[in-house]
Each structure stands twice: as C-alpha cells, then as structure tokens.
Image (cartoon, rainbow, N blue to C red):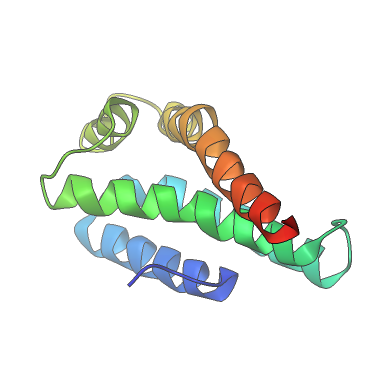
Length: 130
C-alpha cells in the first residue's frame, strides 16, 4: 500500500534502514539521509514554516513515494528508471565513497523525481480550484 502521510514515509524508511543494516547494504545510507530530511520537513509543517502545510505534506509524500516505488521495483527486478538503477547498483559496490553514494541517490531523486512529484501535486491543487 502506498504511503499517505509523512509518518507512513518514516515507517517505510525505518524498514529500509533496518533491512540495509541487517544485509550490510549501502542502500541504508541514502535512506538514513532521506529520513533525517523528512523529519525536518515534518517539523517545518508542524511549526508553520510552510505557507500551505497540507500541500507540503502531499508533496513530501508524493516525492518520497517515488523513491520507495523505485526501490521496490528494483528489488522485484521490475522496470526501474535508469537513474535509480545506477544508484541502487552502486550500493552493491564498495568502491564509491559514502558521499558519492549519497550524491548519486540525491541526483536521481532531486533531478528526476522532484519535478514529476511537484507537477503531480500542482495538477491536483489546480483541479481543487475548479
């Protein structure tokens, strides 16, 4: 089931981190970084930092959902975006340093997923106005 709240996202990230720790997989590095960022977004929403907290949560959940879906499809050996394949495959190697592992994940997520997620949330917001 797709996550619907930031708390759902945090639960999913916790599971990825636990699995990575148990498997000694570098996939846990990006998930841990992402969890920390997600907590800050949640705090920002709670503290009124964003103009529209509800919309920000929708964006956060939609955005994070893309990462979670990419990881799930990769693990299931299903069709996965090339940028995510590169990210996940480098996690199986120990040659890139941890910072490089984080950067390749950030690249895939921000440069590929963010625009798609923002457009999806903006489209939904526009349809609410009509």
